[in-house]
Image (cartoon, rainbow, N blue to C red; front, side, top):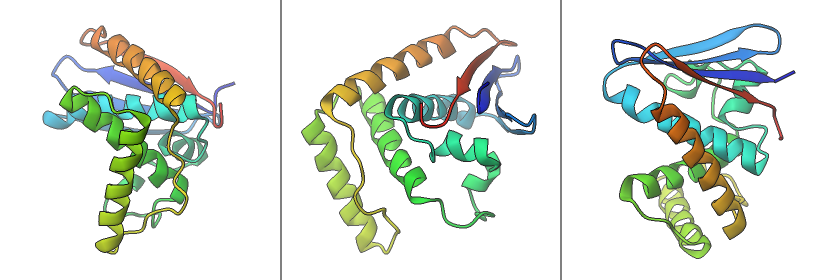
Length: 172
């Protein structure tokens, strides 16, 4: 049985809904409209690719499976600071999003270089950055990008009124 069933629904009015149904039947969801409806599904699918391919259990989907609400990941931060593993995942997802937007593919070394610059800048601004961030290897990057690209193609094929459904199992 999946730990979380993730659904992205494309509404006929252009909005998108993301929902997660947990093993116990409880649901967290969010409706996205306008520019957010165009950007966030791609980001959330990249999360799915990173977390499932690299075996993270405490990223966005893992926390949703544990009972976090989607709204817990934004101000006013009702659950407090995002856990280290979730921040680590967000860093990787953010870099993959940047690659996709810029139409580039970074090597493992370039990925690590960008991460080091980001971490240094974040710490200089007093932001919490996890120690020992685990960055993907070249082989892992290839695999994550392939999974992400397949998910994005599946999402692009979803017609208005349709949905994309995937199962998430923590640590898979």
